[in-house]
Amino acid sequence: MTGLLQVGELRVGFERRGNGPPLVLMHGAEASRHMFAELMPHLAEHFTVIAYDQRDCGDTEGPERPSTLTDLAGDAMRLIEALGFGRAHVFGSSFGGRVAQALALLHPASVDRLVLGSTWPLPGSYESACPDAARLAELRSQLPGSAEELATWFFPEAFLAERPALRKLFANARTQSARSSRRSQTVQTAIAEGAGAISAPTLLLAGEVDRVVPPQVTLSMADTIRHAEAVPMPGIGHVAAIQSPQRLAEQILRFLRAPSTRRGDIR
Image (cartoon, rainbow, N blue to C red; front, side, top):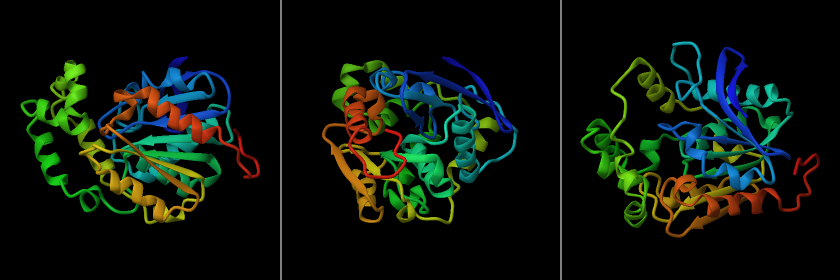
């Protein structure tokens, strides 16, 4: 099922597949729900999988004003409710992992189990967590000419050799618009609460050759989040959902389907 759903002040573009307990997928800063196209079939055999577009992304329509990470967490909470669920498992990739953290911190009753992939901890900034942030920002500012080099930050060279079309993934990046400017502002926002206050059982996944978010940044979150498991993924870059959807799905399914002693678990 694909369509638009009224969620508070938004009309949210979403896709829903499969049956079983709900699992919500949260995309990265410059992406949309379509980044999960190859991942969803692997998960939909076991879960009701929902991928959606955040504010100022994809097909979602909303107020033309800047938003915050708090807004995005509220959107996710209301989406889960609008779809008829009390709470859901949540997977967030990159900036989507920040949205997932915010949801787990601000609306803990909405989250059962949490999977965070290639992300960095709240409340710190990307620039403070990732030493090469300035170079990545420079490459983004030089698009479309820097598209091929930028692709090597998101995917390993060996994978790009197998999927050469991805070298041009960023070549069609839209010129600066009011919408893209709002999105950039949103990505820079945070909340006061830190990741260490997350109470949901959490799986941390990091590509061992990720250049966008170094793996140790993600995996070290296990030192502060209670009930957290950290798993490095050999040979994987920043976007596991595209590079290796089956391997990513295997890790997600293993974690979500494991026995739990938590009262009210929706597995």
